[in-house]
Image 1 (cartoon, one colour):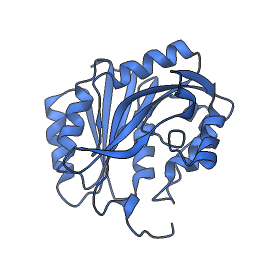
Image 2: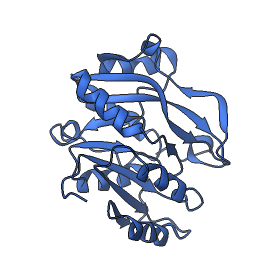
Image 3: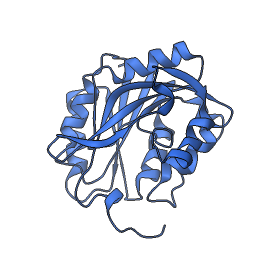
Length: 232
């Protein structure tokens, strides 16, 4: 693996032992080969740390970081601090991505002239079956790919309730958007941490939006998005 891969993919790992191998397999199967995968093990109690180490033995593109439990925002920051790529992507540890996910986003980013690209997504259940009606789509993509002001996309969430904009995992970012703006995820937040920083990432930028459903996010019983959680 090159010391400076083109893309750094950050995966925060917590309580995902049953899903992580398939997630990693879907990332390693990318048609865009010039990447590193950073597995940030966030103090998971169920053997995820050992699993991460085992997965890393099989592919030199995988790098593992172990840390005390601090939540997804703190894990994302460890990934940002250690990323070596010119571009940054995020994949949750129980989700799946299509083989052409990063190649498509990278090519769209280069062609669009901005510093971000995004795609649509659909939901899968614990068994990997698609859940109808839970798609993440962009209204501006009705006629195909489009390049728009990024803040317009972010604000669309407040107008339509759509989540295409205020998510990290359906996007590819120029690393400089975080580095040069001094942006880090808010570690005091255990939920909604994407939206807490992306408005700063989006400010003054343009983003290329694609209608392609290249990301499959998993909905599980008892996960944070469906559970009662602490106000922080």
